[in-house]
Image (cartoon, rainbow, N blue to C red; front, side):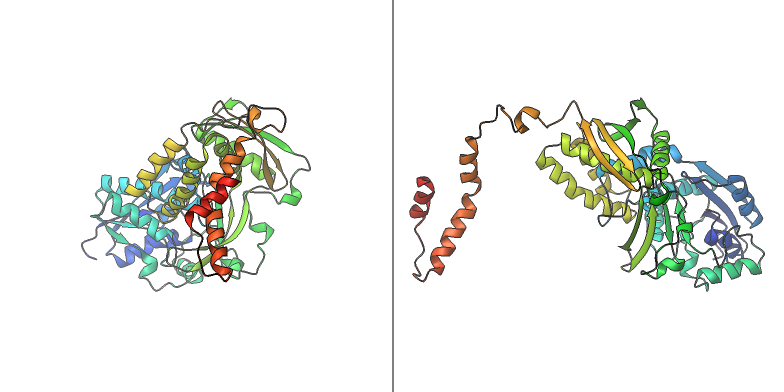
Length: 422
């Protein structure tokens, strides 16, 4: 440990990183610790967080406003891809970690640090996400993960460590013990009473969304505009990426949209319960998935949907800076080349549903789909069905003939003739 003189710490001001600065100094020969914070959309008292870091012993404090970059370069490409982990989790924590770790690496390299440190536990996913980014961008730097080597075994132990050293924890206490992560895309809640999978979350736990029962008793209609699979406007008004995300969050939150309670599979193999609030993101996914069905042909759409699962797995696992993710991104860009248009949605008491869509590249042709007179020749369907069902019919006839007791298979000419006679 003596060769480590300067450590770049991913700092949040939360429980774990609040005690890590002092722990690092006690265990690494009073090494210099640089606290590196990122604003990714959470509403924090940034001056207080800086003061907390310096009071805890940090030699320097950095804080970057990454809100626009996170929304534009990470969240919106993920939405375009349709990435949802295990069919439910909208990847709120996952998507921010590569950017946060990248900024940490940038500062570490600029400051000449010997090591990178994070406050992720040895049970969770974030340790992998941070460290895969470290490996991709600065594989020569040493990594320190206190939760994997210290004697602290629980959040209660961590709080006791802080109290003995007079480290200010703010609102964190043994009674308020939820583990939270917050950014412009979502807020997650884990731990506490949620560790019993049968316990219903307390209403007081939720921070971003109203309870649906307290939401307005009237519908809110909105229109989201997209260009090539990327959201660009709301209700006919062009908006920047972050501003648009903020407005969608406001609308969805007010109407109680975006809550989900799930048990997911962590990277280390265990199941974990999380309660997530993803208000604007829930609406965006509904809108864009609908516009894709409207503008992408079925073969391409089915391919995209299959790849979305792979994309989600890569994001969940922290493999953002990998060849696989880069390659999938290029595919998603191509597949959504014509996913431009507008989607109309209704938002009401915890629900959001599509009520209309339009696009200059719509593959829906009213004349063809109409139940009235159209240019579609219904007689063509007979030949199509005969060919489309040929394999099914041949299989059924052969199997039936073998099972009728004769033991003789029909000759292929006889089978072909039976189809021709129809």
